[in-house]
Length: 305
Length: 282
Image (tube, rainbow over the protein chains, first blue to last red):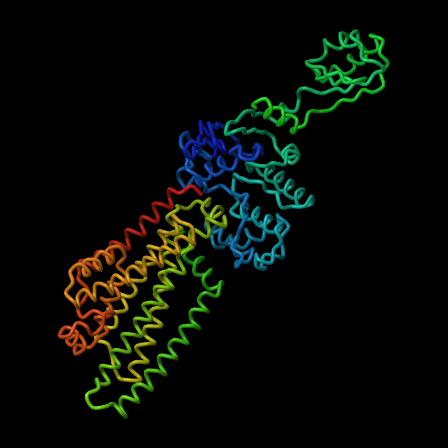
């Protein structure tokens, strides 16, 4: 029965620290096999919400369940791997010892521990370094180990809190590949990240948290669909030209010989070109710009402020 | 099962951090110094004790009691040192996050650490205690009347400090907890001294102050209880006749209510530590 449940389901989840509200009322659902991006500015409450999901922080009110089990019980974390933002491990241990310890706590049977360690180390690019003490690892290697630690008990949900903050571009690409392979295996991934481009490249669905509230949520394709921006440069911006373009725009921003146009529909580009020429304008430049996740994020955050 | 996994991790940490190695080396130095000292003292007493000097047994017992006083001190220090940052340092460094996010209960973490540290202290106490007993017997032939009871009470003393320090580590920063644990240990020591001196002069207010200190932290009361089992009957009788003999030991066995209180104190600290840590936001 638990298998059919969402990987994450929260309803009205709230956390107060005295008079400060860290998370106001978060209601989210993440399905198995889905890569979910969780965005927010510093201090928006992202890490607090993640910690509530993992039983590290007690919610003030609301409910949260992982695979149908309340996060108030340790059983809810049985199929969960977590990579904390502060990826600190005891430096006196070796990488393999750390993974063995976490595998045992994660319920991996004795005979399966060594294969699980080898698989996790290989997967994050640390194969061959498992026997080294963690104090000899670079920061990037420690972050890779943190990811291996999240994966070692073969979870069905992986919660990654800023998983690439210490990685170089190659390391970031490696993590994206790991996330993609997890999706292929049907593992749900909850990605908490500041790196919007990374979220855009990896996530199926996104939620934006602002001042403790989920202010936008949806499939990535839907969020990025509208509106397409068109940049038009002509010999002269006239009222006749503006009137001709108006039916195709939701907003226009003339600037010298240029106009930035928010199109009502991405399909309207040829019609705008025809209308400009019909209005007697000489077309020097016509350039579309697709909405990025950064545009959506900044737009949503500014709208709230 | 999870508790044992966590206990093994704690023992592994102690071994890998060379804590055990340092303690073993320093304890070996202590035993060598004690062995050499007791050997030459015994020789000196046998050869040239002046007339009217205390008997060899009396001096050997005094040395053994003082040696166990040091053992009690070392074991107490060890209990505080191993536990003072066992939770708080992991919270401060963030290593606790990945650990507590596993499908375990928070009290498992406290119980695992406590169990490992108690085992470590127990093995250390037995090793150093038996070492002192063997050296004393070899040098002087003296055997305390009830060494196992004395060792058990010293162990209980260490467990009280361990549980108290573990509770502090669940609530406070490592630095604050360390300062508080040592201050409380000092309060118990001074309280025991004040109570003993109050007994010598029949001053009830001083005795009451000592009792309050023992209720606050019963570590010195447990040492005093242990010291009773290390002394020969003649020494105890001498103290009963002249109570000024030694304010660091007791001429009476530990009162059963105080023993029960110490056990309850230990259990309460441990359970409170588990409860507080279970409620703590990490």
